[in-house]
Length: 89
Image (cartoon, rainbow, N blue to C red; front, side):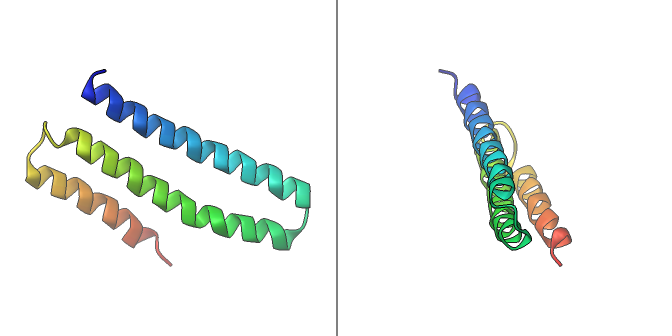
């Protein structure tokens, strides 16, 4: 299997898994039907989302490592970090 395809497959599978977690969380919110429980579930999702973003970005950077310079990789990594910095409260 081609290395690039494996990287894309890994990225896609992580996103599918994250989507499944999101759907499961929504169903749990409906099952428990209380605001308190929904907020707790939402808090967990708030931690999972950025983790998935970082992992998928890391896989992408690893996949690009043979094709782009280290300077460009640093710029991309800095961009991901700036997203986190800009989104913090």
